[in-house]
Amino acid sequence: MGIEKRLRFVISAIVMSFLFLISTFFFFDKAVIFIPLLAVAAYICTFFAVFEGIEKNEWFMLFILPVLLTVASYLFYFLFPVRWLTRIPFVLVYGVSIYAVLLSSNIFNVGVERNLQLYRAGFSVNYFLQTIAFFLFSNVIVSFHWGFLANAFIFAALAFILSLQLYWSIRLDLHISREVFHYALLTMLAVGEVGILLSLMPIQTSIFALTVSVAYYCTAGLAHLYIDERLFKHSLREYIIILAVIGTIVLLSLAW
Image: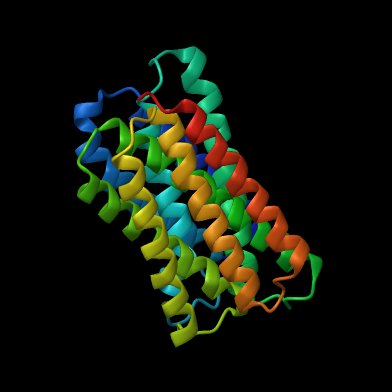
């Protein structure tokens, strides 16, 4: 293709935003139709944006966040009142987010050196938007009021997929190492257990979603620093403070 790569990012983001906008005009009972359509569109648009040099597990890893962020955003949208006042800002935020995801995917694809600022920016954006996607999904999952086993399974599966991509992006190997796989499993177990615990507590939906998302953020953050051999005392202290704050919020919000 003779289209400049940056222009392809813009085109992909615009196409996805337009499709997202169209999908919001239909009621939630049509979500079964639009979820796979948006997921496939996100995969195709990501491929169009970063198709050069995709090899082996990159066919999966580079597409995880664009697809999951799109599906999470679509489902989360229906928790808002359906009106233009919410539709346009939401679609704009999604468009900017998907553009940022495409930039990060491209950085991972071209194999930028890990000590360069460009890679660090791409990694940080990827990590941040992973947490946002997890939070959006969490709100949707909790709103269904399923049992603790269903919650634990879904949260664990989501944590495994996202953390696998996050830990892989540390070294960008063409094969998933045993270390990356094992730490993704540990993250899955930790977040799943938090999901079970919160499901058995009288806690508000928003606090539930926030807490399990923070659990993923902290668990994945500590694990990726350990894998990257950058887990220092000040980093550990920061995550402990975050967990202490969210734990306090949970205790204060319990409705016994």
